[in-house]
Image 1 (tube, rainbow, N blue to C red):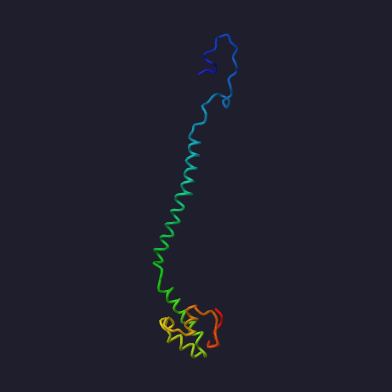
Image 2: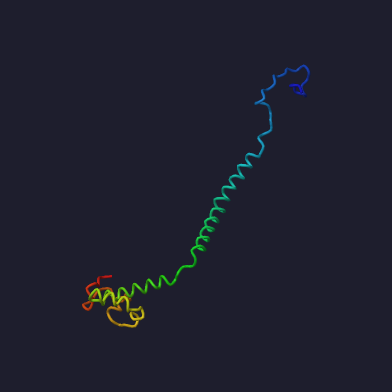
Length: 138
């Protein structure tokens, strides 16, 4: 091909051909812009879709691995706390305290109406005159 413009008359002045980088060429194809848009959508999908799902998946796996919560531990701990407060209030010596811990059950604390039982249940918040030397303010 020649560098001449086809629709010019033979005698007209010709302009020198444009360098390659200045010649008319189609605009850049839409692929890069579409690619940027798809990358943005992919990032949004990762941020708001896959990452939260991954977090939920990890939490579910963790809960399945650890099993159901042990409900007896909380009640047993609470029973021990009530019995310990009862024995702290009522025991006068260390031997009496140890014996009280080994022989007392939460049912005893629930049935009794003594100051020690009231202290253990939380109805009494301070130590009275009948309290043992280990009793302190709650």
